[in-house]
Image 1 (cartoon, rainbow, N blue to C red):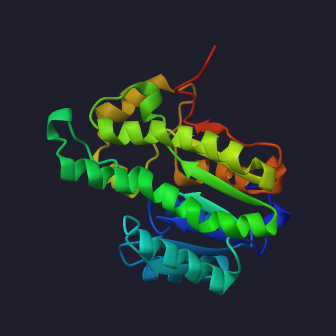
Image 2 (cartoon, helix red, strand yellow; image 1 turned 45 degrees about the vertical axis):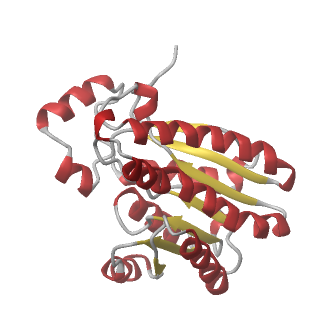
Amino acid sequence: MTPIYPDLEHASVFITGGGSGIGAGLTEAFLRQGARVAFVQRSDATAFCDMMAEQTGRRPLFIPCDITDRAALVGAVEQAAAAHGPVRVLVNNAANDQRHSLADVTEDFLDWALAINFKSYIYACQAVIPAMQAAGAGAIVNMTSISYMMGQAGYPVYTSANSALNGLTRSLAREFGGDRIRVNAVAPGWVMTPKQLEKWVTPEGLDAHLAKQCLPDTLSPADIAGGVLFLASNASRAVTGQSLVIDGGVVVTG
């Protein structure tokens, strides 16, 4: 059962990639807290919004947007603020883990991959932080992954961007801590989203991964949402500059 965080009720929440995969689970989780949720993605999410309205009694605001377009992303944040009030919680979630080898990396591919997996995070933070400073508080959650911790091959630009996001998280936590803006990261393990199931999951690969976990269960978007809600709420008012791993116990320490 998901805890209720009263301070998230009516909070203005902005999520990138909030209509599918882990992002859809985050949107639903915040809606069930009573938050006012706006999210962006390129593909049409009208059907998802209809489903959320029916299932939660609250309809998220879907803003079509290519997050690699800085002006469009800033405009989406402004549109969300006009509808729901200044953004109090930002979840940088959108990413693309397209598989590639080092030999595959062209200049165009590198620019594209970093635009999605790193630059957009910076642009979204720039867009929301002034209003958070004016309000005297705010919470930012940057979604990374455990892929860089595991030293996984098969997508070196993606793992590099995820590692960089931890540096960004720590630096922004220090820079804006005086404004009571908390900046944390969440590093999921292998979550069984429709995309992963369609493109990458095989019985053999899943069995091998589960053998690395301490817990024997596969992960779902709902497993990630609990940690994000905690970091977005006042329950974590003294937590900043941290990376919360939610992976069933793959990258354990000790």
